[in-house]
Each structure stands twice: as structure tokens, then as C-alpha cells.
Amino acid sequence: MARTARLERPILAAILLGCLGVLVPRAAAEPRPIETGGFAFDLDVEVPAPPERAFDAFTRETLAWWGHHFSENPKALYFDARPGGGFVEAFDDKGNGAWHATVIYAERPKRLRFNGPLGLSGSAVDVVTSLDFEPTDRGTRVKLSVHAAGEYHKDWPAAVEGVWRHFLVERFLPYVTAHPAGTGSAASVDASNPLVATVLRYRDAKRRNDRDAQRATLATDARMWFETRDGQGSKLDAESDGDPWAGWDRFFRSEGILEAAVVTARSVRATVSETNDWYRLVDRPPSRYYMTYDFDEGGRISGVLVHSIPGEPKPHDRVDEFKTWARANRPGLLEKLMPDGKLDPALEKAKQWKVSLFEWRRAAGLGLPEGVDSGS
Image: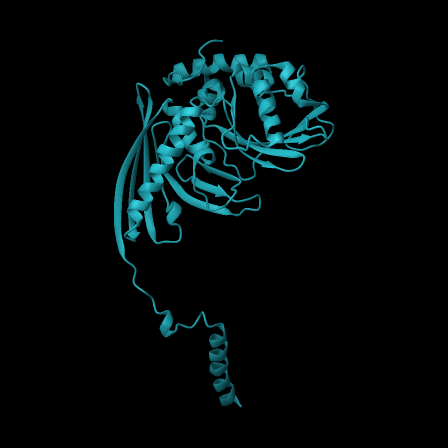
């Protein structure tokens, strides 16, 4: 009996492995050799914007100009421009996507370097891509260097160089030329859609503080919420604005670009990339968030929800350095600027922030970032 059991076990194992098939090497599935090699090339383009703007447009507004995606309609495409951060394409809200590359060097606004296959995903190849942002009399010269080694096909060098030439010359250059300072206009949304067009008109009117134009886009009882639609929200109209950050945004010259928009029959969920002088003073890259606009039957904005993008990385900045300086040199300042440890968006607080950040940067020898309004 014991001998029969010993015979049955290997026979049964062989039958099971044969049924699984993929686990049993066959003659037709023998490993095949691959050709290996490498290639390198350099490209450059001059864009009519300072290095800070060029760097941010490349890393934080990528979806607006990047011409190739794994998804037909990606939810987001961005760089987390710090060592260990990713160049990420999010397909949807369910966690599906692609990690195109890993950032291995980041020095805003001078240099960005990342390692990843990009469009060669699935092949055993290392591709190191470096970009230098050098100031010129007319803007910034963006110098690209690509080095690849590993699995190799003879048509790859020309193909990869051609794609990068398309990105830099035909996509990135025109985009930065059209948005040299992040003017707040739409980056890559369908402005022919009537709901999107209304959102753009409202945002433009708000930027210009044109109250009549704002009224023309808003429903009578429009409301505004932050993060969730709990309660009645704040009244949103041209007079009250409904936005507690409105004074802060105007004082610090906030600039928001619509990177993408998801449109339904009665709503537009816009992905917004925003920067301002406060961000520049603390060396923070633009932030990204959602703004969902709801519409009434007449096509007017009836509600606005501002909410975070799930999984969006926390940006790196110098806020902690400022706090350390303030505690040591200006006792009580942080309690005034950040009651309960949070930013107070009141206009008077914004003015105090600006004076304090100027003082801190002078003390730290950091200088004034390019593009910041030096007035009070």
C-alpha cells in the first residue's frame, strides 16, 4: 500500500503539471537570445519663458503637451520632481496606471534626470534621460540628453529620438509659447463643449475680477464646497465670491491652468494646476487638485466642489525651513500666520506672510525668486 502511494504521487504531480502547461518547459518555448546594445543622443530647444516656468511646465503640466499615452484618456500625467519620485500616468480613479520612470536627480529650476523605459516599457532596457534648463536672453534653453543600454532593436535610436523631437519642438515649445507665465487659460481641454466653455468664461472673469461676466455664468443660488458636499456650502456669487481664499489668491497672484476635464451631461471635473507668489517664495512647485462644476438646466454653474486628487504626492518645499527660522527669530509669528497650525487665507494674513517670507529669504541668503511681485 505504501509503495502504491509513492508511485501515485509522482504520477499525479506529472499529470497536474502537464495540465498547467505553462509551468513545464517545452522544446518550442526554449529561451531565445536577445540583441543587446545601446544608443545616445542630444536635443535642445529654446522656449520664451524663464527656467522656473519651463521646469514647472515640463514637470507639472505634462498632460497638457505630452503627445503619447498608454491610456486613450489618462486621468493624470505628472512628475513628482524629487529624488525617488515618479513620472506617473494615472488611467482612472481605481489605481490603474503606469510608472514611466523614477526621478534620480531634481534641482528646480536647473536640472531633472529620470531613469525609466517610457515608451519602451516591457523591454529589458535602461533609459536615463537628463534635462538642463539654462537661462538665455530670450528665455530658457532646454537641453535633453538620452542614454540607453540593454535590450536593443536597430530601429529604436531613430524612433526614440524622433519622439523626443516631437515632444520638445512640436508640443512643449508651442505650449510654453502660448502659456509663458501660466496665464490661467486652458491647456488641453475641449473648449468647444458648452459646459467647458462656461467654466473657462467663469474662470477668466474671476481672474479679471469682472463681476458682470461672473454673474452671467452663475446660477441664482450657486454654492461652493471644499473636499465634501456636506451642508449648504458657501454662497457663490460675484459679490461675495463664496471662496475664503479669493483675497489670498488675488494678493499672491494665483494662476490656475486646466490640465484636463472630464465632462458629463451636467458636470465638469477639471484637473487644475495652480501656482502663485506664495508657492514661489517657499520654493514649492505648482499644486494639482480637482474642481468639479455642476450645472443647472440652463447651463449655468450651480455648484463648485474643490477637492484633492487621490494619491497626489505632497510637494517638496521650504516651509519647514521658514518655520524653524521663525521660531528662532520671530517668536509668536507662526501663531499669527497659522492659527491652529493651518493657513489662514485672510488678506491681512497674506500680507504678513509676504513680509515675513521676504525677511526669511534675505536672512537665509536665498534671494527673491524670479517672477515674484516685490511690492507689498
